[in-house]
Image 1 (cartoon, helix red, strand yellow):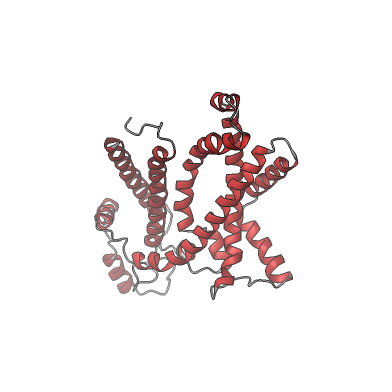
Image 2: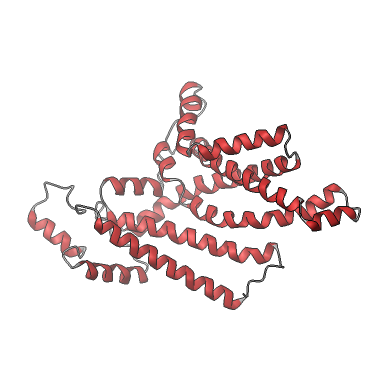
Length: 306
């Protein structure tokens, strides 16, 4: 177990380093520079800013400074909000993003798994086809389309909820519903597929032949084993939900990390882009790491020391 954890942790560190490196060089490959949008900047000021951010150094020297700062947990200063660090901006936006994302995921995963169970137990019945229709619709239509639909009908036409803003609990409902829609569709399909596969396994047939009731077979054998593949998606979903959906946050005016990311792309603030991308990547990689660790908890038959 210990060797497996160390191996996975090492791979996680390498993955984060590769992502950081690729993102750094891809950002510098884009035409233009972070200061090109400020056309009225005097040459002397531009020169001082370039020196401060090491932009006047060769690319490999800039990369060395970047990696050195990362090792110290420093994501640098924003090129557009020059008095604020990327770290502080991420921490300021994280609570709002996490609130929307985690609530959306919690509701979406719970409802999705429940619908998947209903569909599997009513395979090829009306409820199964209804759940499949919901799953296909939810996975085919982007979340931001649902967000716009919710805004128009619930916010504009019915006037039940505010269209955008961040001034109280009621402002959470529409963005959370938009986030939950994709999770409901995804986990309903995952759970149904996993349960159908497990219900056809030999050990389930054997359990039924021993006289166990249908309910006991479902609870003791089917649900437990069907939940193992779901863990593969829970970890990464948890990680990405923490930073929320960049587009949905922008649509509903949520003051989260997504807003900073969208603004940084528009303004070519590549220190903020690098920081946001790296922060999100770390959470996703960490999510996969947690998923691997949970395998052994859900099913002790899975050996983690290989």
